Length: 119
Image 1 (cartoon, rainbow, N blue to C red):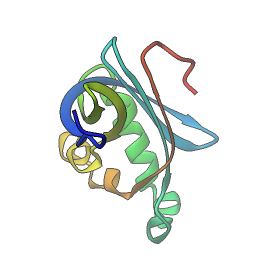
Image 2: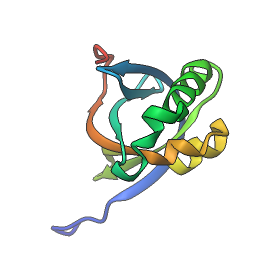
Image 3: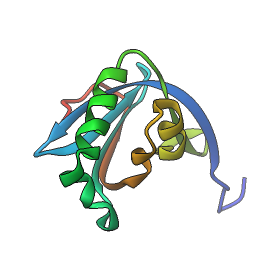
């Protein structure tokens, strides 16, 4: 085994919970083994989502979809153990049927192997 091992990636489908914390979207993807908490804001060039109702529609779509669909999460493995994750916003937008998912920007995250308080 070399000093520097190459990271491996695996995409898995996970259940998710959606909620808003201080008016901002939060997604927790989970499969009973891993819990991936992601906190988002809206990208600057799309701040108009707040005024034109697109954010409200996105929040409703995410809220209605929780428990009814799974989302694609890319897990990053090092030395055979998961160390990081990324929720694929492009695939989420496609699955949800709402392209505004791609206007989310990650602002914070947490990766756990046990249930956590969210947020």
